[in-house]
Amino acid sequence: MSDVTFNDVENAYKRLSVYLRPTPLLTHEEYPSYFFKAENLQPMHAFKIRGALNTLLAYKESHGNYPSEAVAFSSGNHALAVAYAAKMLKLKATIFIASFASQKKMEGCRALGADLHLFPERNEVEERCLQYIEQHSRSREILFIPPYDHKEVIAGQGTAAYEALLELKKSNALPPSAVIAPCGGGGLLSGTLLATKALYPEAKVIGVEPEVANDAIRSLQSGKIFRFETTPKTVADGARTLYVSERTFFYLKQLDHLFAASEEEIIDAMERLTKHLQMPIEPTSAMVLVAAQRLRASPAGPILMILSGGNI
Image (tube, rainbow, N blue to C red):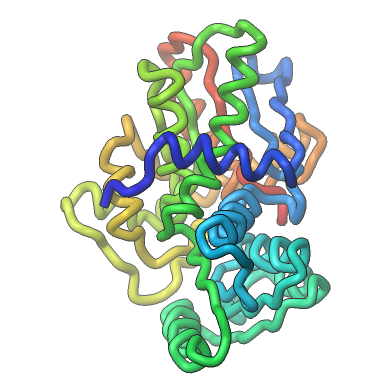
């Protein structure tokens, strides 16, 4: 399902630039030729605000008005993003979330005024969310914002890499040899692929996911989407998705490589990045360092990494 284009990413960037400040592109002497796109410095400390806000803004462009209610299911950061975007635009937000999700993220959603519905398993979270939409969509204008399986969500997430690559071009830095992003449902990676291949066609686009939550790798190996029956138990809570979608799978098949990171590697990378960059780096975000160090043997240029969030 190839319905998202580079033009969609560019349009998303124009919309979001009115509401969001660019996040910095960081370097550190400990990691020569690495660039870190600090999406952990976004509002609510994660890149997810890009996709959620872009979806609402695009809805208004096409409908002439905002929906009365934004509804989503999430493992955490997407919930925060939808709650934040809805509050920014003075809309109601209803979030379905697993009861084992980060307490900090749930408290953040409540503080933003979102209504939370908690269920013990991710499968039930998704089912109850869709039931809610079916029951209430006739009486009010509801916009369902999926965490990754949506054209405008993917386009919005792609603006993180797009923004970073534009900054690299302006700085006259060497062309990046690779751009790396973590993989949960594949939305960030799909948007990253679109932005990178348009601006730097020769650069590799690399993904990384936890070994114990390797549904994307298993899907690529078999040629069809693999789905977990229960939520994978990984410290990288942003990558606890059960499966990738047909839409994101289309783009994941175009990646140059998709690595798997062990739990030990993820924790070690998180500790090192937090120490060296002097800011919170969540486990899902830290996986990019694991992938970068596996590429380090034969670098052809700088490596850009998307630090997806800082909600530990």
